[in-house]
Image (tube, rainbow, N blue to C red):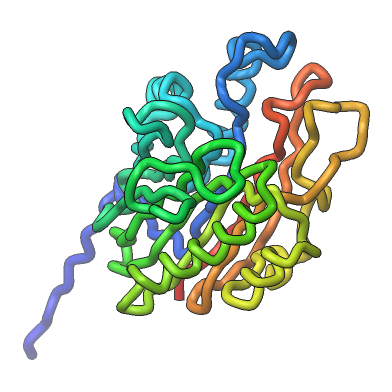
Length: 275
């Protein structure tokens, strides 16, 4: 009789693959030392601690400056970022996409301006400032699955700029996504859900809040204006997703410290799965 032996090798250091991904969008308010108790030097530890605690696999930031990203690089090990400043010299506010390097590989990335000439530095339509969008084609190292992440910040004053920017965003998504990979679009849109432009986007992509399998967590509004003792003002931060992405959880995280908020926006986070 022939006896066969099988050897099962167990690696105690191997990490089990988690099929779920945590993704966040967060307007962190640019570094400013003229904001009194809300100045960057006084809130940076709490804001970074929040990000460290929730540990999203990927997140899109708005209003980030290079000095803030340098601080995150020092205090959030394991992350890298894609993005460039909105000014002609590459400085100024970024809309960077941060990601865990152990989980994702960057296959392609770019930044464009929300304007009539998106491929070069420019201010579009009636916008008060130049506005940009950074996008990345990611590949999950655990599964090989590919998906796009677009992250943006629309103008806070220009009505026409916001309306045209939303159209441009969708045009760019269609332009680069020739292989029909899943798409995630995050950002501060400076628009309420009832606005014409958000309704336009909601016909192209799914608002993650409306399709979350679990009931949404936290307040409905995402802009707090640092007013700890007042109700949040408006819902202007979103995570949109295409078909091929399943959202199991959605939350607006209203964490505070010493009766203050780390930013004038709340972060929005989802748990999702690329199908």
